[in-house]
Image (cartoon, rainbow, N blue to C red; front, side):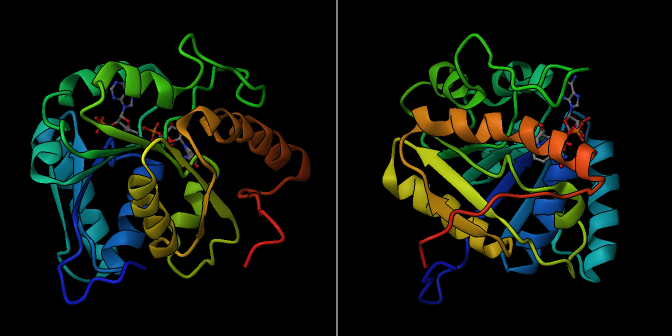
Length: 225
Ligand SMILES: NC(=O)c1ccc[n+]([C@@H]2O[C@H](COP(=O)([O-])OP(=O)(O)OC[C@H]3O[C@@H](n4cnc5c(N)ncnc54)[C@H](OP(=O)(O)O)[C@@H]3O)[C@@H](O)[C@H]2O)c1
């Protein structure tokens, strides 16, 4: 957790936070004290999902907005949409995220073969995001290997590491703190070019889930504290 020195924790907009992964992260981070906004293409859907999450939390901690308004109101944006919606969602918030950190959780899976590694034209979703948004946005890649099923169950321990990559060390640290706040462990995995490993690992994990008949296999880096 960050050393906040009584400073309020930052506001986080989860773009596509109405889905499985984004709502799971929202629950964990709201519980840890972050100010969370769920972003959606539709205000109504954002509000509906927000109400469900607040009911689970037992308090009205989360707000819902359309993606651009959510990104405008936050200092950190987290992108949790299917790869097919990646570019369109980035286009909708390009201006609003300038000067901020964008944490990309998107995995470039190619349905129906989601247990086979697939890489997009720009090498990784995260590098495509950085190229599209420009140098005014610090893109970090993280959380691709954490199961939504476990995130959404607040009593379930998150028994895995989060590989965090990005070209700005301070921005990577923000994501590492968020991994810790989500009850996982953030691991500094270096520059954004290394996002290829975390994005590729998701297909392997989906295959492992199927073959071993489990719902939330994960990864661990050993040998570090
Ligand atoms: N689920 C997991 O366990 C998991 C684990 C690790 C990583 N991931 C990755 O995290 C990302 C999100 O996964 P998810 O399971 O949360 O996805 P999801 O539930 O299928 O979708 C998330 C949200 O994306 C928006 N969306 C969906 N289709 C769209 C489209 N065609 N155009 C624009 N927006 C669209 C929707 O929000 P609105 O309709 O509200 O706009 C939706 O609620 C994916 O890239 C996935 O590979 C998932």
